Amino acid sequence: MVKIRHLTIFVFTLFSLQLSAQTARKYSNEFLAIGVGARALGMSGAFVSAASDVTSGYWNPAGLTGINAKFQGALMHAEYFAGIAKYDYGALATRIDKKSVIGLSVVRFGVDDIPDTSELIDANGVINYDRILTFSAADYAFMLSYARELKEGLSVGGTAKVVHRKVGDFAKSWGFGIDAGIQYTKKSWKFAAMARDVSSTFNAWSFNLTDAQRATFAATNNTIPENSLEITLPTLTLGSAKSFEFGKKFTLLTELNLQTTFDGMRNTLIRDKTFSSSPVFGFEAGFKNIVFLRGGVGNFQTIVNDAGDGRQMTFQPNLGLGLKIKGVTIDYALTDIGDQSTALFSNVFSLRFDINAAKSSSTKTQETK
Image (cartoon, rainbow, N blue to C red; front, side, top):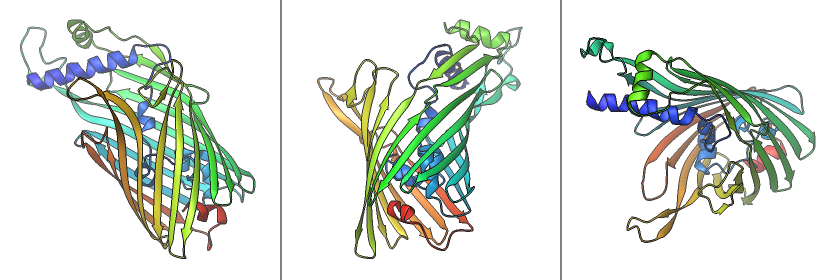
């Protein structure tokens, strides 16, 4: 029970630190930085140029114009930290006309069944285990995307997103933001730019704490959170991809991205007081457009070595597999949470399916498959 109580205090402390700020902060709404779809995750998220399916609503809404089916859907489930955290994603997109596509995506990242021992001891000082309750800490994002092909090879798109974050009955927030993207295709090359939170995303927090919960904050020397406004600053990702064909059976897609944040200095390869940039590389090798092998590397950081007498470079490697049978694609990704030394890997599975698919694929889509 001591461990459970410490866990509860830790959760309250964590969220008091996260939610008390009223200005733009680093790592705001970080659950939206994880990524969706095992195909993209297997490529380490180097996907803003190659995106051409329903997951483009997240990666780059301009890529939705690459969908050839009347409807295309996707589902994904992943678990992190030995199954403690659950990450789920679902999306559906449909063509409006020959040049326009609309899509809806939903993301949930949550930890469920967290013990709440803030009222374990009653007013008389007696421990009553029946007073232990559980709650969930969950983040939700609802994204509505629209894309249009302006001319052959050039597409633009935007995503309006509503963010809802909830910590039991203690705290909740609602937020709104906009993403915007562009893609340009020239023969076997694709170029793209993706601006997340281009409008800045605003999360308005409200709190509903009982007297016992306020006492827990006070007893652990934590500031009691008050209603606040959390701001997520824009990020920009630039990308280029190139596809290769080796005979009639083998294909290769490579992509290089440069991800830049503007919320201050981070531990990245390129950094300044106002911005931080990091490269991401991914590839996808295909056989007969049926079987795919993927890999990528990103999240480069410099850390102090185990001996404490120097620094070393770390990175995050990813691997993935894909199987496409007619209009159904099953993807798998093996992702490392941190760097190659920790070996804390997570298994990610996703499903993509077409409804009323076109008889033949457009040139644009073939170049990205």
